[in-house]
Image 1 (cartoon, rainbow, N blue to C red):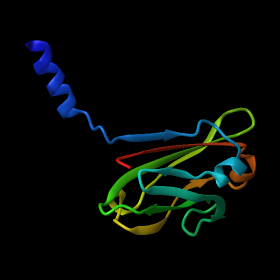
Image 2 (cartoon, helix red, strand yellow):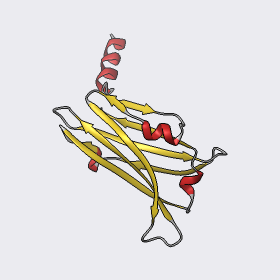
Image 3 (cartoon, rainbow, N blue to C red):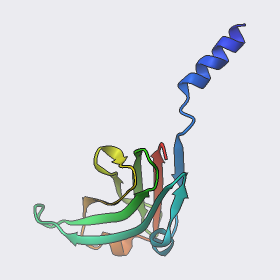
Image 4 (cartoon, rainbow, N blue to C red):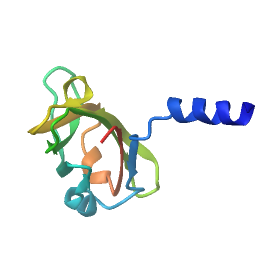
Length: 137
């Protein structure tokens, strides 16, 4: 009887709708061609850029931009993590990106971006990128 009660407890406390997608380390070209489609949500149109920093002297921003479309009748939630490696497999940048409050509203498409300060030339040194998406999508 204890096993049955414990099993029911575990089932009630596990989010059966949790989703994780991990690209592993891939080339920038493969990253920019990446399209994730699951349960009525599509995440795609990834791009990387290095832009001027207006506030931090001597630094630039590395920017990740992508779109997310939710075809469902309910809001969905997710967060994305990105890591960039150089030719020696050193982590040279990392950032997190998500829609406002990690929520993509029902039947909406959103553009999402995030940036982080880095040294100038960091994007040109980036040879591999990893994307990890976690959510209830």
